[in-house]
Amino acid sequence: MISPNSEKDHLGKDFIRKMISEDVKNNKNNGRVHTRFPPEPNGWLHIGHAKSIHLNFTIAEEFNGLCNLRFDDTDPAKESMEYVEAIKKDVQWLGFDWEDRLYFASDYFEQLYQFAIELIKAGKAYICDLSVSEIKEQRGTSEEPGIESPYRNRSVEENIDLFERMRKGEFEDGSRVLRAKIDMTSPNMLMRDPIMYRIKREAHYRTGNDWVIYPSYDYTHGQSDAIEGITHSLCSLEFETHRPLYNWYRDQLLTLNLLKFCPEQTEFSRLNLTYTVMSKRRLLELVEGGHVSGWDDPRMPTLAGLRRRGLPPEAIRRFLAKVGISKRENYIDVGLLESCIREELDETCKRVMAVLRPLKVIILNYPEGVVEELEASNHPKDSSMGSRKIPFSRILYIERDDFLEDPPKKFYRLAPGREVRLRYAYFIKCVDVIKDGINGEIKEVHVTYDPETKGGFAPDGRKVKATLHWVSANHAIPAEARLYDRLFIKENPMDDANFIKNLNTDSLEKLTCFVESSLVSAAPGMRYQFERLGYFCVDSVDSSGKRLVFNRTITLRDTWSKLKQSQKRMKK
Ligand code: ATP
Ligand code: MG
Image 1: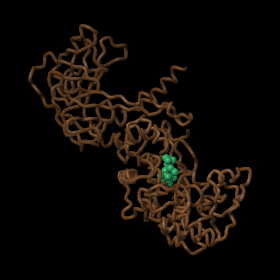
Image 2: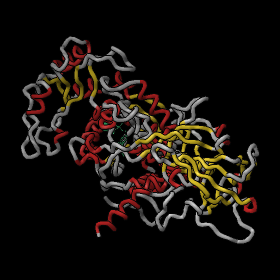
Image 3: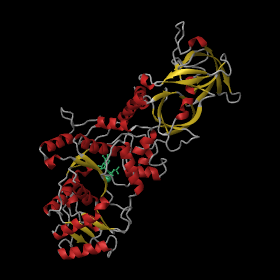
Image 4: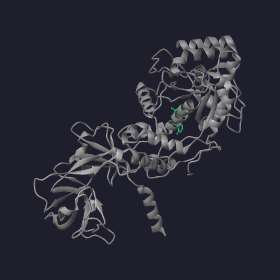
């Protein structure tokens, strides 16, 4: 794992922006910059896709250009409208706008077919009757050249006839394919007469049963770029070996005067995150295996999951700006994402009080039936966020962890005989501990308060070592809190073929908690800092008028690095 690195020059530009600046300066494409984000609608987007979305859309913004949203939907078996809608929502949520430029490669099927006919006529493509597995076998290896298909030199007439009949559905699935006629000895295996069309009787979510032949991804992708007038086709590094093929199709069609535009492909490294799997196929396995509640489970690295977890899109954009763009494969520490989330939420979230694991506290000298409204500020560093009133009364809840009957030396919170401050309220002193007669569990703590300490300060100047959060028992609202931990226990979960076994079995804890009464107005998606406990967001799926569910977006501090440090110390 290496720390984030973007290959920036002294002007702060990464290599892609530098290249585009040059292109604009040289008036290439008449100075036009047009990018696209081209997802396949076969799953939900993850934070890796956000890198590509962010790059394509911000480059368009920076260079006064345009960015399209295009669905590269060439595989009817795996694609659906559900995925299209989810992807559109995610791109919008990230804050990007494709305006009227929403496209589907499936809208180009007819055009792509006509291009293929022209390639056949030009002797650049042929119908091959070998099976897909025979084609694979005859493709050779990286050391050995491939073998030319016996069908490679069919006449143009025969090829056209067969291709037209393929389209009409005269042949069985898998019985024939259309292949580009390139070079079976090319060192690049992708150039060894790649498949352009297959026969597949499968209904497509948009074109229905109009087609029984489907174009390959490589053939479709580049020509879709050209049709849309894309100038810079930016994609992740695994497509580097596909670039010669991208160029080959494009150049053949340019030579035939069939294209008006000449897009160019540039690759950048994918976003990989530690403790995360980032492939739609793997994420689908998690969903289908019931390891998570769905694509939008708040532990998933999908944009829908992260949104539900409570991440503001600004946190993702902040993170992506820090990660930058490079051509080197690397792993980014998920801790960097977490620190960006904390930075963003610290600035924007109102502070409130909630108690996750309640312990009842009775203030013996506080009059029964009295309720005081205490002033609490909404943000310690930003007075523009104002303040609110919180009710204080005789019976409160504090955090169970904040009391110990027999405290060790460095425990400064509440204990018998000890005085502490209640946030925004008073000093209290523990005078008694009430236990369950049967199992000895602490049921409640009895305290006295000092009425002179209103607001949390003693006029005589005496100090306390801890400030506790609390809620008034009669006013607090019961809620469910869901606490999340990383979904995987291994830095690189894919180190093992069976990545499922690296799942963290303790990644979700559900608690019944109490939140302060001001949260009666908390609506799905709203974010708060629960003082001392972390940032929480109202769950947008399971919360309803009657039931409040909070997802902990993130803890206040990086508990994992603390854990690592203490493990290191223990080793020494
Ligand atoms: P996955 O590997 O997760 O299945 P994919 O690459 O198959 O993703 P596509 O829908 O084809 O998903 O991707 C759309 C665009 O997003 C592509 O241009 C791809 O390069 C880019 N992309 C996908 N994953 C990442 C990533 N981890 N980092 C940066 N860009 C990515
Ligand atoms: Mg892909």
